[in-house]
Picture 1 (cartoon, rainbow, N blue to C red):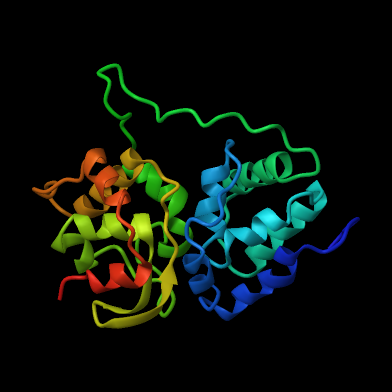
Picture 2 (tube, rainbow, N blue to C red):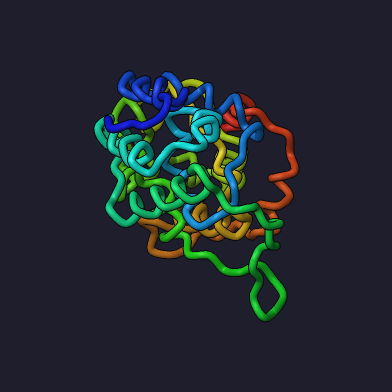
Length: 242
C-alpha cells in the first residue's frame, strides 16, 4: 500500500475481518460512543464499515491521505466487502473530505426533512435496504450461510413489527437460529437511520414475498418511541418470540 504517513490503528486491525464476525461484538458494544461527522456518504460508511469493526477505528484514522483511504477500501473489498463502484466512490469522497487532512467545519445538524403536510418525509424501503443491508444480507435477502442470517423468509420479520425495529435501533448479539440454521455473531445498531427510513425498510422487508402488505405497519412515530429505550443488543435477542 502506498503510504506517506504513519499507519493508522484502523489499518492495523482491518485484517481481523478475514476471520469473520469476531470483531462485530466490539462494534456493538461501543454503541452510541462514536459518531461520524455529518456529510454526504456518512450513512454508507455506517452501513459498510461498522459491521466488521468499531467506528472508533475509522474516526481514529482521521487525517489519512486520499491514497491511503483508497487502499483501505481496497483492503475491505479484498476481505469480501461487496462495494459497488458508485458506493465505493461516495464512501471514498466522504472519507477524504470529512476524515482527511483538511476536513470542513461541522455545521449544526439540520432537522429531519418533512413533507408539505408537516409529517416526516417518506422514505423508500427498497432503497434503504439496498444502501444499508445488502453487504451482509445480500441483494436477494438470502444472507450468507454461517455468517449472516437470511431476511427473506425470516420468521422474526413476520411475527411482529416491533422486533425488527428494535434490532435496527439497538443491535442484536448472541446465538440465534433461523429456519434451522444457527448464527452466532452480532449486528451493530443502525440508529443513524432516521425514524422514517427504519419504518420504511421494516415495512419493505415484512411485505417482501407477500401478495399484500402485512396488516401491521410500522410508523416513524413508533420508531421514535422505541428509539428512546435503553436496550442492549443481548436484551434485543431476549425479546425474540419463540
